[in-house]
Length: 211
Image 1 (tube, one colour):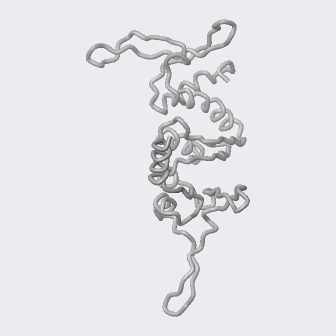
Image 2 (image 1 turned 120 degrees about the vertical axis):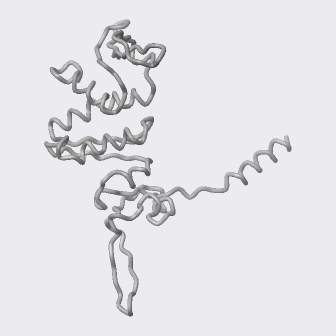
């Protein structure tokens, strides 16, 4: 992607929008393999930026989160430009939750997603239930059934059934509901059924004493 005209600048701009403070990206050959170089500003003793810059191999000095953002930048920008569909597993892995939110919001905004590109992603980042402006029919939960295979169901499928003044009623989940809180409480299902970790550790200590 960086070799395509204009995309090196777009990728640098995308990373800058995620507050990564990278001035420029370039490619170099190291031992027959192509590597990415990142250029940063050099700061003085008072933490003020200078006119000096420093360049280094990305793999040697950038964090895992920065690397994830770099690897996402090419596919994200490409699908936004072509109007295609990007499928991402664990989109928030190794990235700060705000960086993940920013990436999702890029697809939700008509200003940045003029070609109606689609993002389908799996995540364990429950913050997105609160802060991403996702419709109920855009949120799906995945839960294991009795055969340990995965079943998907949408938040829009949930109905609250009750009775008011003797009249039965059925209503959908309100858009302004604290969905993250309700998910953690187990109201939507799709949460792990964990055993007692404390009891397990007691058993491990007992087994060690027996030996």
